[in-house]
Image (cartoon, rainbow, N blue to C red; front, side, top):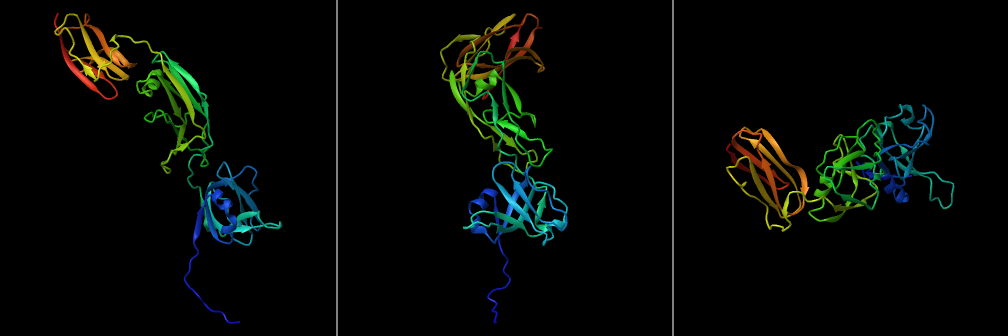
Amino acid sequence: TDISVIDTGFTAGVANLSIEEYLADAEKYEGTLVKITGVTKTDSSNAWPSSGSDANLTLWRGVGAEVTARVDKDTDVDEGAEPTWPISFTGIATQFSFDTPADNGYQVTLVDYAGIEQDVAVAPLSNFNIVSPPDGLTFAISDTTQDYFFNWNAAQDLNGGKVVAYQLTIFPDFAFPAGDTTVVVKGADLLATMGGADTAVVKYTVFALDPEGVFTTPVASIDTFSLTLINKVPIVGVEDEIVPNRFFVEQNYPNPFNPTTKIKFGLPAQSVVDLRIYDILGREVRTLVNNKALKAGTYSYNFDASALASGTYIYRLTTENNVVSKKMLLLK
């Protein structure tokens, strides 16, 4: 028989697939090289074979679809020690079936031991869920210092021993301790998400974050919940409810003063306000408003300096978008 060489130097390509992608079109890939990434044995999988033995391993990503990885004793795979899970592996898409038509029994037969990448980094799994507050709950917030609890189940980490960090989507700037699945936020934090409205419906989910920074995209929990927030915080220190068209902080009056003076400011929208008094050396001497959520309006707070010595003092008002400092003079 004559044999003609039609091509040389050809290297077969490898299809990088998830388990779902492979099983969705297994006939297409049959007989080709495929790579399955970031998988581990299921609890019901057969054991890694001893040297000279075959085995069918059942692998998955900790949730969802499963694939059979065939270890054939005619390769060198069975001669190697059981790899450190999770792994990525390269093999030939094969099929073992007695059925007609043969539309099942799809598997991936490992080619060689060198084609196994061990202890690969895998992103936290997305099959964790929110526990509380339950979907559709209403929070009537009457105290900015009140504690509100958010809780969820831990995300599974196939790498084991790693501490997964989490983030609530409605508090993107909050850094929660890694591994914590319960966090406490204040009423003021919830009011800050309302954009100045008296009532707001917010949707939230939980992100699991890779602690080693290998995967930069957060993994969301399987559910998204809604939460109705109602602002029931009584207005304290309000001078009138006429909403100013701009933010302002007036010079205290009277100034100079002895021993009391009034500090007036206006908020065009709900804001978390902090108002403190400092001496000329920058030492804090009094807190008039301690990071409190205030509705839009005009406010006036009295400052009594009876216990302080004469001199120059500074009052500083801080909101999310503004910091204003002004001097005042106490003369006794």
